[in-house]
Image 1 (spheres, rainbow, N blue to C red):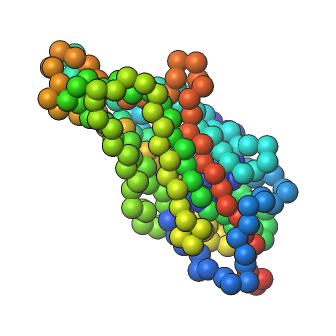
Image 2: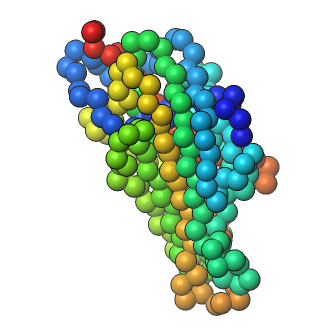
Length: 216
C-alpha cells in the first residue's frame, strides 16, 4: 500500500488523546468544505499484508473506508496454529482544514463468518493518537453455529467523543483484530472469520464528527 492512498476524515473521531471540551466550540454534523486528505503512513499486521488494504475518503468528507483483501482468521482442521488470530494496525496522517478538529463518531465493520457448533469468534478494535495511550478496546463476540455475513458497530456518544488536538499533527492509529476459537467443535471442522470479500465489496467505514477549534 502506498502513502498516496487517501482516506476520509472519519478516522479522527475515535482518537485517544482528548481535546478539552469547549463550550464555545459546538459540535456539528456538517464537515468543513475543504478537502480532507488522509495519508497512510504504515500498514502492519498479519491481517493486512502489503498491498491488501486500501483506504478511500468519501466525497463529502464525512467518512472514510478501509477495504481488505486478505484479512482472515481460522481454527480447526488443518489450519496453521497461528491462524486463529489476525490483526492489522493502520497508522494514518490526517490533514484537516485549518481551524477544525475531528473525532470518530462511529465505525462499521463487516465481513463473513463461518463457525462450527461449539466454536466462537471475536472482532476487536481500538483507536489512539500517536503519543497517547490506547482507548479501551471495543469487542464484539460471536458464537457457532453461524454461516453468514456479520456486522458490528462501535458508537460513541457525542459527549464522550475524543478529539484530535488542535494545531498539532498527530498520527492516528486504528488497531483491529479477528480471533477464532475452535472450542468444542469437531477437530476436523474449520471455522473462520473474514474482514474481506472475494469481490472486494466488504469493507470498514469510519464516520466523523467535526467542530471548530477555539480561537488562539
